[in-house]
Structure formats: structure tokens, C-alpha cells
Image (spheres, rainbow, N blue to C red):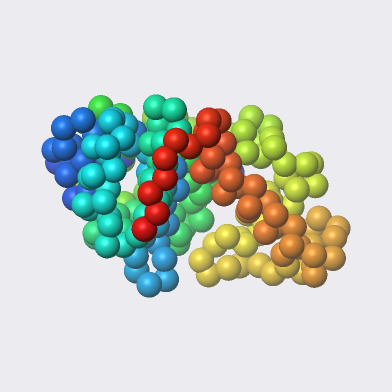
Length: 229
């Protein structure tokens, strides 16, 4: 398992038309994507960070995403939006890469100059090369760094107990998070020395920690405002 730091450069400076409309809106800027995935019904779900005046950001979000449902919150000078969205072909293909080739994103995905995304991910060398070969032609991929995966240096993994960390790493190595899934609770349990019947419960607790880490680890202030749809 290795950690890769990439730069993804979309043609025209944006991956999705939503980003293009953000760029055209005065007083609103893209910051990062904290969570993104495809749903079984074909829609996407994202936790997005924007910057600017809250009223301007809220107006844009309501205009663009109001029909799909969203919440928006302000934490200090940081604005987070959680919403469903309609993925275009480029976004769908990129998300299928992470789903189909056992490539694990380490959010946030951070916007840099020119609309590029700086992305950190974990994968085996074989999985990374296979995934790289099917990145859509509309996106240029630049590999900036590659290094061995060091669990102790990862903030999320460091928050787990030693037993939780071993269980999570074993589940990844055996292909539990692959598509299709390549292992069972019983096989994972045999590797770590616990009953297969309790593996699912332990993994759900770990995944709950992961979601909390992705969405709110860096948010320390109370929300000032929330809009529910």
C-alpha cells in the first residue's frame, strides 16, 4: 500500500458545470471537497467547502442545488454545503475509478490555482496503475509524490485503537471495500483473531469515526446559521 499525491487538471478549468458557475459568481470561491460519492440511483452526494460572503454563497447554492435538497452551515469564515447533485460524465468516470479499482481517497480534495484539484489517495501500485489508465481524457493527471503508506502518520488512523487499526487495515488488504467485495466478515475475523459475527459491528464503528473525521475534524466552532431543504 502506498500514498500518492496527485494533481488533477480538468480541461477548461472545471470538472462539473457547477464549478464553472461558481467561478462566474462574484464573491464566491471554491475551496475543497470533503466527501463525494455516487449513489445507487445515479445521483452524487458531496460535502463541499466554499468561501465568500455567506449570503452570496447561500443564494448560489439555493439556485443551483435547491431542487435536490441541501444543508449549508457557516463555521467561522468557512462555509460547508452537503447536497445531492447530478454528476456529468467526467465526474461519474472519476468516481467509478475509485470504486472499481480499490483506490481510497484521503480527503479533503483541495482546489489550487487554475481549477486543479490536489488529491491524496491510498492504493497498491497495481491498483493505482490500473486506475490511472482509465482516467477520462478530459482530465490530466500529474503524479507529484509517491511514498510508502505509514499508518502512524495518518491522522484518522492514529485516532483508532491498535485493534481497530489492525481490523481496518486487514479489511482493506483483503478487499472488503472493493467492488465487488472480495472477502467476508469471517475471513477478516480469522486474520485478526475475533469472531466473524462481531467484525461488522466493529467496522461500522470505525466507519462512523471516518465519516466524522472527514466532515468535521477540522471544524471547531459552533455553526452560525443553517438552511435546511
